[in-house]
Image 1 (cartoon, helix red, strand yellow):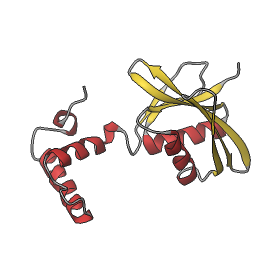
Image 2: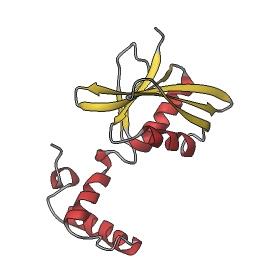
Image 3: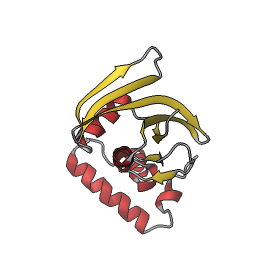
Image 4: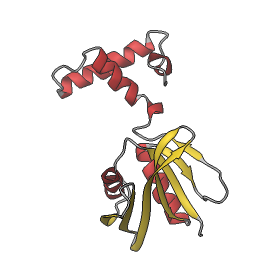
Length: 161
């Protein structure tokens, strides 16, 4: 058994989302999803900085609940790829799966950055009824003002379960 770099991400993401992040953030080329004999396991091949890579993806569990586990061999390039994915969508990075040290990365779609709270607030307060960009822009400003001018900080507005 070799040493791998792992990234645990929310199970609300699909394998196709990982492909999109690899293409748009990592600028990976020729990204291909390969289904396995088990519906909860996949592999993904891609070309990154001229080198062919193979990432394994499967459904897993950590103490906080179900996740998608991304696994790539352990080297500086693998760490950079996984960190980039984490910075895009959030996750828990384990640079070396043999040492057990994990790092939480707040990504653009992490709960910690407030986006999930904003979306919930906007829907519950009927702030984007038409779904157009001007209404969305106004809703963002209304939400920000509501948090700034009340004692309901983003973590108190809709606390995690």
